[in-house]
Image (cartoon, rainbow, N blue to C red; front, top):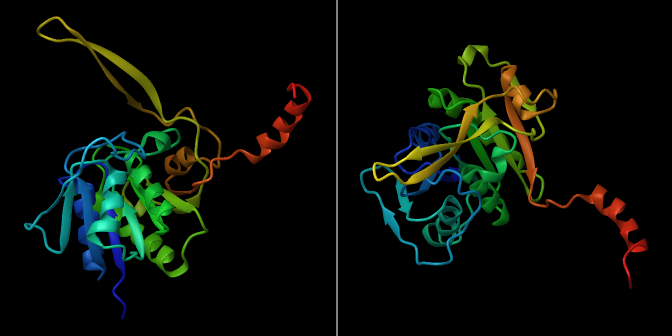
Length: 259
């Protein structure tokens, strides 16, 4: 039986329970896992690559199998994992996660977890990003085990060209999860907040964040609604962000542009 190769990455760092649990379940299921993670929490780093300084790769000997840390972003980890650690040998799948919190709606634009899956797709690797629907005590073991169905499907069938999957698992008991639902990206996820603090030296500083809330999005096809109703949300995302419908409408601008 073929031993499938997995490149496993995340944005929360090598110490995250999410990636450690995902790795453990993959190894239990007979996968050949190469793990490459940031050396610290890089949440919110989106799809950024590091061009302004050199990067370092360190192998962690305390973990079974191949485990490396990089002093860069999640996308850096994908790049170096593929080109340096795997020496350009394409894995059967790239898995980003399990993230420690949700990546729904607008989170997709900011998420380092999603950014890593996008980078894998750019490199021609079938890629998926996995997150819980809430950061409040997620059951990573359940999420990893349920995700194995999707992992195996992607390995066996591949994905459409330039497409990757953003997967969100409801943070509820395994027995209450109703199944899988294909969804579209919702509008917004959280009540956005910017909090002001005063340091002991009387300097002002600011913290960008927000409370978890799934109340804004009511569309039955959205990722929010799916997890709120107890379904695992699978959102196919494309590298091509072009709005082709808008292009047809904007063609009419030719009438108003001086030539």
